Image (tube, rainbow, N blue to C red; front, side, top):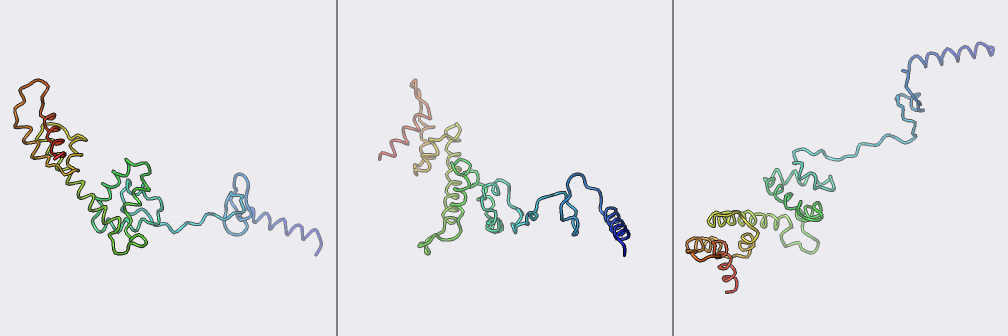
Length: 198
């Protein structure tokens, strides 16, 4: 075999390889000769798709508060158990905090803390707190309706403290206010503060 024929053979093989591969714009990496065509000239491997569960049926406002997406299964389970409304309500409360995702993670902890095996978990306490918050909101709305006003921070505070706001609102609304500077709301506030002192 002479040098001329070996060069011709190599040239024809190179031409055949060139025809099989589509023309790529720019640089071509070493990977082209194996089986993959790529224009990436990095020697690093392509990123491996991590085993992260998909969002599934978790609402967006709840999923935004989950820092570690590996905990999505926990929230899917809570939603399957019927706690989606509670999670949404807690997500709304978390948005008012300095670190919403930390608050949300802490309040939705479903395992007992170390050393507190017999005590209720944070999630159980959260459900109780949310139930009380719904009750307070309902009672505050009813009190405001009796007073003929909107719900205020003062009414919420009185309901949370356990003052009989509905009874006092009815009493304040029924009492005549003939003197100047008197109103139903002022009388209601006076009654609430007086009852707290007793």
